[in-house]
Structures are given as structure tokens and as C-alpha cells.
Image (cartoon, rainbow, N blue to C red; front, side):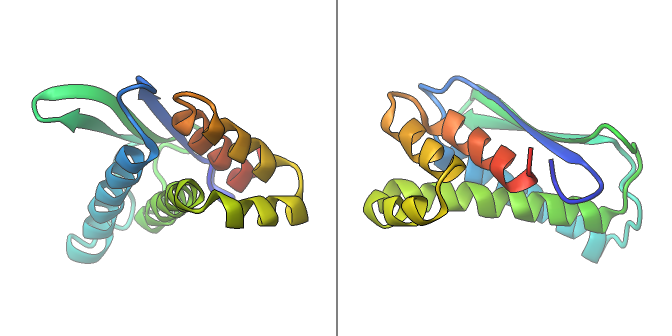
Length: 142
């Protein structure tokens, strides 16, 4: 969920085949899509209540990412940009946690709670998707 307008993110994928890097790449692509709608095409209100992007490897579909607005089917395109940007930044943070767990462990001790849980998920086999989903919940306050 993102900000006050409730844009939800769902990642549907096989945790063995898809990592947080794949999710970040997909979210970056979504962010480009929404920015193009807002900045190039000058679309004020996004015409759909959701946007789905497949995560693929060559010709094989590994999963998908969906941003959706359950409360309001026609949100301002700028809100979709904000939601995609926040989701991308969150996935990127999890990538940084994977790259430097020691530094993030110190931060988790300072903050306590959910951040430590995310780090523990990253230590589990195939825990990257669950970790990024936990971070999405943490960032949305849910």
C-alpha cells in the first residue's frame, strides 16, 4: 500500500526463480511507464485501476508484479508515479540489505521490530520475496 490513496503492490512469483533484483527491475519498468503517462502523454488520471507487469526470463514467465487501487479506480497519474517510486525504492533497499547485511543489522538494532524481521527473512532459503513483501508492508504502515 502506498501513501494516502491506497495503491497496493502484489508480487506473484516462484521464490526460487525470482529474486528481489528481478522485482526491482520490474518496478523500475513500471515507474518508467507511469512517468511516460504523466510527463510525455500528459495523462492526468490513469485510466485503469491496476497495472500488471510480467517478470520474464527469455520467453519464460516467472511471475508478475501488480500495482492496484482498490479504493478508487481512477487515481491521478502522479499518485501512480509516487507509488511505483516508493515500491522501487523499497525493493532497492532490500537489495542493499542483501549486499551489506552487517551495516543493516546495526540499523535494525537501533530501529528494532520489522527491520530485524526482514533481515531474518533474507537469511532463509528463498526468503528474498518474503523479505521484500515485509518491507512493502513496513513502508506502508500495514
